[in-house]
Length: 153
Image 1 (cartoon, helix red, strand yellow):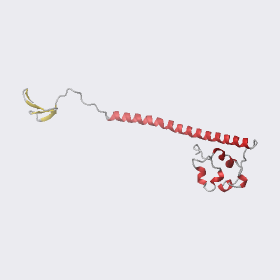
Image 2: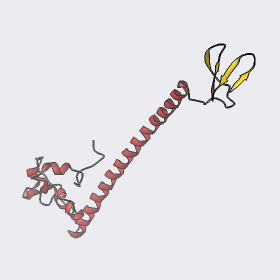
Image 3: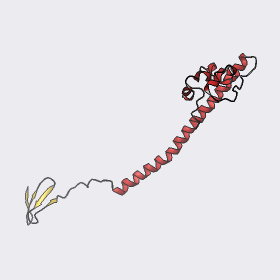
């Protein structure tokens, strides 16, 4: 569209060409320009998110530790229940401590240790006795073993 105001200008949609100055200029817009985040604002938001994440990490690790401690406490309770069940079935006697000072998996299956607590209590709760790990000692430390504790370091 052509208009006359002392000089000729050709208006296009958002830009007009001023014939006197020979440069492209943005046309005046009734709308406000689009807002964008500045670098400082983005850095502030990122630092706040990082700070909040840093505060939640200790809380999560503390909750995991509490869960492991609860698991260990439950395991001790299970040993107590198994000991009580064994004593009830055996006229009030508790299983022997077992062991002759030798700490090996072959000693676990010795006939002198057949009444040791680690061989008689686990089967009462559906677990393998320690003597069963003689052929596969690594299974003793698996998560499915009664002798495994998540809380142990």
